[in-house]
Image (cartoon, rainbow over all chains, first blue to last red; front, side, top):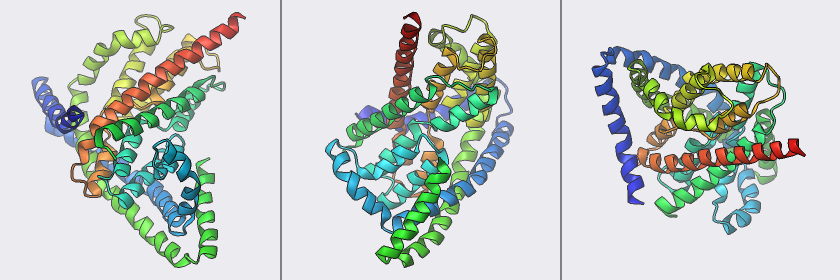
Length: 177
Length: 197
């Protein structure tokens, strides 16, 4: 599994190099394009502040009160029997429903367990490898006025389940527990 | 749904605090939670600015279009109902490529365009067509090659190597996308069997 770490290490620098060389070759005003696109990044970061504040405060209250530990006590034995850390359960549940809520949970897990812990890496992989199914369906079907969604929701949620299971297996294989 | 979960966390938390005697910790959590969220967002700015800047260069250089051409043969197999040279195919492809590069804001309008074209192919019916379900299944399984936001959060919490999850994310994404395609096919065949009966 060393190859996965090597890809992780080289992927971004190589991609950046390729983009810059190809952009120059195509006579793109690289620096100006860069700053133009970068402005978008500020907008996104600022626009998610209220979402994250709302979610992180709720999660903090839920955890500080002891309610989270209480809940975990129930599901831990079941999940750990199949090799899933109980801490991941809330994230797996909320990921298809709300992207920003999941982002809040992911950062909370990293703050609590450390970004380089098994749970931290698993949360990061789950966050990156699945998408907000409910949001995608609402936006796309809503925009063009589709009333009957057919099997779309079922397929989307089952795919999320596959993604989360895959994340657990892959992270366990690559980083160990 | 999110509204309910959000309120649930607060109310249960506060009720729990009363019985548990943890009201002091809850008070503190409100302020540290809010502060942490803002710090996190400020930390996100650095990598988001850098990455979206890079992607803008790629877009201006026409790299996204080249990639779309490259993926066309595979995508055609996934959408047998879309005729050759139909504009829907172009939008589906550009949406997928934009998603791969984490350009969510660019991907959404392209995806909506793709849906409009697919609706036309389905005679304007308000029912989801086979192509639409396949398209959304792939979209909900996430196609991201580089999870920018996640890397930024890891940087924020002083990870020794913030990008070491890129490989695992890629593998898991591949599994979820392939899974989505297989599940989608399965449901399609089940539907067509039902129609035949």
